[in-house]
View: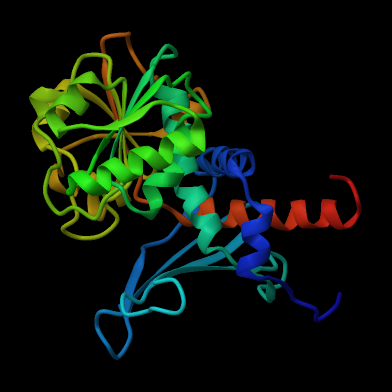
Length: 311
C-alpha cells in the first residue's frame, strides 16, 4: 500500500483516447448499470453564477468515484469546458487517481450515442443527419460513422455558413460527402439523427421523422433543456441511459409519463430493442458517472500497457 496517486493530464488523456476505447468503455458502463449505483447529479456554480459545474458520482464493482464537469463561458486562453474524473480506492475510499479528460469526455459522450445507434438503428442505415455544428457534433459524426455504413451526412445548423463549413470539415475528416440542409429535409431523409445542441425547445417537428429512423439525443442534461418534440414519443420506442435521471434532467423531463427502457438492459438481453425495420427508436443520453469511471479506468489501463510496451 502506497500513498502515491496516479495523475493523467489533459494532454496525456487526449493522446490516449480514441473511438474504439471510448466505445468499449461505454459498453462496459451501460452493462454495469444493472448492478452498479448512480447518485443524484449535483449542479453548482461559482461566485460568478455563469461559471457552472456538475458532479456525477457512482460505483460498480471496482469503480468508485466522481466526475466534475465545469463550464466557464468567459474563458479565452483555456477551453470553456473541462472534465475531471476522480477515482477512489474501493477498499479504502482514499484517492486513487485523478484524470483530466475534457477531450476524452467528448469521445465518451459520442460513444454513448454511437452505442445506441449500434444497438438500435437499422443495420443498413446510410444517411446520418447531425443537428448542431459545435465542438461535440464533430465527435458525434466520427463515432456514428464507425458503427454504421454511413454514405452521406446532412448538417443542420443555425447559420447556413456555419453548417456549410461544418459539412466541409466532415468531408475532410471522414471522406464522406456532407452537405448543409434545412431541418425538415434533413430529418425526413435520415436513417439516423443525432442532436448535439444546447436547445431548450424542439429542433424539429415529430411528423418529419420517417418510419425506421433512429434518433440519439445528447443535449438535454439539465432542467429546461429539450431537443426533441414530445409528440414523437407516441410513435416511437423510447430508450435512455438512466430512466429516473432522464425524466428529471434529460429529454423525458418533458414527458414525465414516458417509460423509456434502459439501454443497458437491452445490451444485457433483459429488454428488447428495435421491434421492426419500420420502428422509430429514440435514445436520450443525459450522461452518468459510470461512463466516466469506466473511461478513466480504460485510459489508465492503456497508459500502463503503453508504458510496458504492449501497444
